[in-house]
Image (cartoon, rainbow, N blue to C red):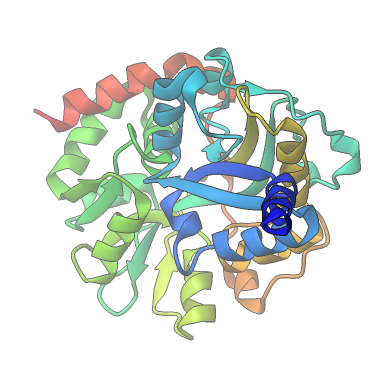
Length: 323
């Protein structure tokens, strides 16, 4: 009896620390990087990593905002550079304490943020089926065409927000008229990326808003080059996905270790061929399919500009598409 009590007490005292990561659903999907990242990190940390997943990156911010100090999140993974200033202004994260010069981040990112750490990046693009659709060469050509389009809601989705940025970068004050044109071509606006891309693959539209890296998935996983990204002459918005430590984390040191792990060679080798984005550190070997991707020019706005204008642009979009 006494031996059993001592065993139970010992088991309780050596329970593994828990780390809770809020992320988006495609990260934790069967084909996403979540499982491999979890196993690799748990192997080195002696902890248990638990995911709570939501539809998309904007949904993560909305959840954190609603929960406030009651959040279970230790780490939020899947916000992007368009959301960092809003997240910071709400006081939802704390400094990560990592030294940028020691992380071997790519120079092109120019990353120096004390609160948010990049873990992958990519460029938004419209994907089409080469067996059914002839590609267009600009956003204007797309809007002048008869092609059907599926994209994501900018209120809940970071790709949808990317299209918001794209429209403003290309059309400026004329963006409402451009949204009205796109409204006539829109099959549906989905809450997140997964639903939109699934509908496209089912043949529901000519184009879907996704990433320049999507064709690499089809080439590597399905051995087909049927699906390709259009390259627009005016350029494409770039998205840098980030992770941060929750202000209310009960495991800040473990959370910091997880962020450092995300930019390790081990994690960076996993992410491109599971999350289908580009690595943020130098020296990661990529499959040949990545060499065949389009290499667009980056266009857009600074995180500070996006923070100032995001809500106004969303109102502008809602007004235009609801007429």
